[in-house]
Image (cartoon, rainbow over all chains, first blue to last red; front, top):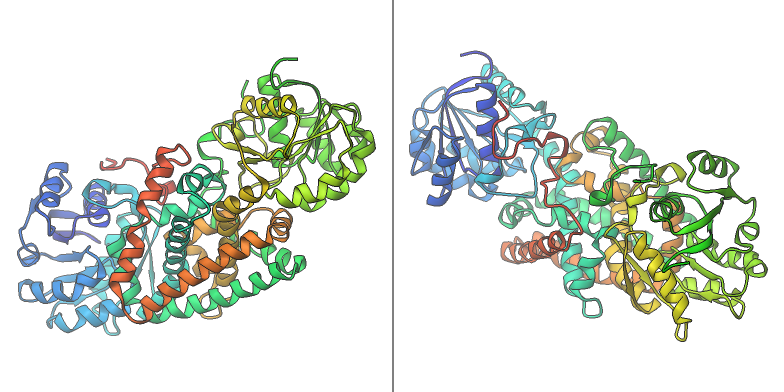
Length: 313
Length: 313
C-alpha cells in the first residue's frame, strides 16, 4: 500500500466525522475496504444506504477485527469502554486512533487497553459543522483544515507517518503537539467559545421582559452568530467539558476577569478603556482571513447580500 | 410625493449605514435629491465618486437646510452635538431621525434640540456587517431586516407613517417599541453578544502559553465566529455601551450568574447539568432559521463545503 493507504479501515461511530472520514478516504482512494459500526441500527442502515461504508459490523470488536486502521469517531466519554471492548480484536501492527476534541483524557482512557504491537496515535481533526449524524458528512470537511496528532513518546515512526499521510490525503494539514498543549489550545479556540455561546443563548431564553419571539426577530444584530455554535451536539460537548476541565476552567477564569474589567468600564463610563479593548481585535480577524480559516465576505448581511457597493437596479 | 418618498433627503454620516440608505433609497426611488455630509473630506469625495449621493455639503447644517428628511448616521455619541448644530437649519415639517443602536439616550440627547413643527422620530435599522466606511454600503442591506421606530408619545401620525413607509420601501420590516424596551431587547440580541465577542478575542490575544499563530490556525473550531463581530467598529461600539449602560449591565449580570453555574458544573463533573444546558439551545437556532434571520447551511465548514453527503469525485 502507498503512503497513507490502508487495506482495511474500521470506523467506530458514523456521525458527522465518521461519515466525512469515509467520504474523504473514498475520494482519495485511501482504503481497500471501509467497515463501519454505530450503536443505533438506524445509523448503520443509513450509512450502508448512503454508501460511504463498504460493510457494516454489529459491534465495535467485529469492526476492529483484522482492520489496519481503527478510528474511534464517537463522543470522547465512550473511548475507554470502546478501547476495552476492541482490545482483543486488534491485530498486531494495527493503528488505533480517534477524533476526540480533548487529548490528555483520551490518552488516559485508551492507553491502558492498547496491547503491545498495536500503535496508539491520538488525532484530532479540527473541523466540523453544527450538524450531526451520518447524513451530515461530506468529503471536503477536512480540506484545508488542521488535524493535530499527539503521538506518545517513542511511538512507531512508520505508523505515525502512515496516519499523518492518511489525514493529509483526506485534505488536512497535519500538526503535532503534546496532549497537554493540545488541550490548552483547544480550550481557547473551541471549548471556551462553545461554552460562552451555549451560555448566551441560554441566558436569552430565560428572560422575562424580552420574549423569545423578539430575540429571534432581531437576532441578525449579533445574537445569531452565537446560536450557530450553540446548536452543536450536546452529548459531544458535555464529554468535552468533563474531559478538559483544568484547561477550560483556567481559560474561563481569565475570560471572567476580563469581562469584569469591561463591566467596570461600562459602569463608570470609561470610554477610553472600551475603545482600547475594542480596537485590539480587528488585527486578529484580519490574520484569520489571511490564513484561509474564514472568508472575508460581509457575512452579517447573509441573505441580504447581493451587490456590495452598487445599487441592485 | 407618494408614500415614503421625500423631495430632499439629507444623510449626516456616510459610512456603512448612511451609504446603504442612499443606495436603498435610490433603488426604490424614494428621494428626489440625496445630499450627504461626512466629517472627513475623503469620505465626502468617495461618496460623490461612488455616486450614491447627488451632492455633498461641507457641514451638517448645510446638509440639513431645506431637507424633508434628515437622518443622522454617525456614532450615537455625536448625536447631541449634531442636533444642536442643525437645529436652526431644519425647516418646519421636516423629519429628523437617526439609525442609532440605542434609543433612550438618543431621545435624551436629540430631544432638547428639536424645534416646534419639526418631527423627531428615532429609528434603528437592525442590520449591518462587520465592515465600515462609504465603500461598504449596498442597497440590499436592509432587505428582510427589521427597522424599529420609537416615536415619542403624541408624535405626528403622518410623519411616522412617512418614515415607516420609507424604511419599508428600503426593504425593511418595521416595528414599533418604546425606547426603553428597545434598549433591553438590543442589549440581549446585540450588545451583550458583541461585548462577549470582543472579550473572547481579547482574552485569547493575551495568553502566554498559546501563541496567536496557534489561535489563528485553529480558529475554525469555534473561535472565528466570535472574531467576526469583534471586528466591528470600535467607536460605534464604545458609544453604544456608554449609552445603554443599565440594560447591558443587567444582561451581563445574568450572563455571569449563568456562566458561574456552568463553571461549577464543569469543576464538579456534573455532566447532567451540562447536558441539560446544552440541550436547550437547538430549538432557538431552529426558530431563527425558520424566521428567515439566518441560513441553515452548515456554515462551520465554510470554504470547505461543497457536496454535502456526496463524495466529490
